[in-house]
Each structure stands twice: as structure tokens, then as C-alpha cells.
Image (cartoon, rainbow, N blue to C red; front, top):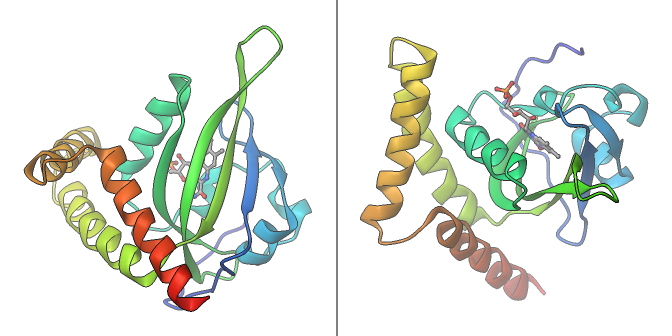
Length: 184
Ligand SMILES: Cc1cc2nc3c(=O)[nH]c(=O)nc-3n(C[C@H](O)[C@H](O)[C@H](O)COP(=O)(O)O)c2cc1C
């Protein structure tokens, strides 16, 4: 796997592009479209066969990935704001839509992810929430306890705001659409 050091510089994702990847059951990359390769600053041949966690940015909380995997393994779709680390070490934010893929016998045979650009306003809200989660994950003695506490905190943040995780993400996505309209 390519070893990358994070660089604190943003890459921009054009608003009219969908960054697509497919995965096998373990999260290995089986397909990457040209827009994704461009955003990731990586050649397709260097991505195929690699685990999706090669994209993981250290600012991303484990609790969000736990939620994602629980959902898609359970056969459901999920939306999430994800900060990715490009092969150059730079970062880019996306609103990601992940879902399972089914074979003809309705068995899950892989996963897919469609990503699009996120707005500054939704990024700063997600960033603030993720910072709290990362802090909990860092400051807890064991990885398992940290993950459980962080997940509990995420659920608590949502219930304090009287919302569910899905409603929260979709309310941020509305901000993305508004910013798109302003830019148009
Ligand atoms: C279809 C699909 C797309 C994914 N896309 C991303 C992504 O864009 N960025 C990312 O960090 N993880 C992505 N993941 C999640 C990774 O598999 C992994 O869980 C995550 O990077 C955290 O790494 P870790 O589980 O090793 O801690 C994706 C998973 C699937 C199944």
C-alpha cells in the first residue's frame, strides 16, 4: 500500500462531478471512475485492489466508519460527510452515499460509493462534530472503549438536537444545495 503523509492543503472537488468507487465485501477497491482518480490524485492502477482505508484521513472519527459499515452490511444505504486523504497527502471533503450491491440471488456481493462536493458550511459543521468525536477516541485508554464512547457521543449530539443521524446529514446536504444555487 502507498504510504502517504497528510498535508494540510485542500483539493477542490468540482460541484458537477460524482466521484465513484466500488468495493468487494472487505472494502477493497474494485472500480474507480476518472473523477475519483483525479480528486484522489492517483492512477487507477494504484487504487485497484487497495483497501478503501488508504483514503482515510486521520481527522475522521472511527465512529462514523463503524456506523457506515453497520448500515451497508445490514443491506441499507447511508450518507456521510467524509474527509479523504489524497495520494499527495492533501485532503478533500465529500458528501458520500454508500450502499450495498446485490447479486441475482439478492445476496450482498459488494458495495458502492457515490461522492460529491460538500459546501464550506456543511464541512465546518461536520468538522466541529468530528473533532469532538476524535478527541473522545484519542483520550480513551482502549480503542474499543474510545469507539463506544465516541459512538455514544454521536448519538447524544443527535438526540440533543432532536434529530437522527440521517436527518442531520441530509440537513447539511441542503446547505450544499443552497450554496450550489448561490454559485450558479
Ligand atoms: C464502497 C466504500 C467506499 C468507501 N469510501 C471511503 C472513503 O472515501 N474514505 C474513507 O476514508 N473510507 C471509505 N470507506 C471505508 C473504509 O473501508 C474504512 O472503513 C475507513 O477508511 C476506515 O478505516 P479503518 O476501518 O481501517 O479504520 C469506504 C468503504 C466502502 C465499502
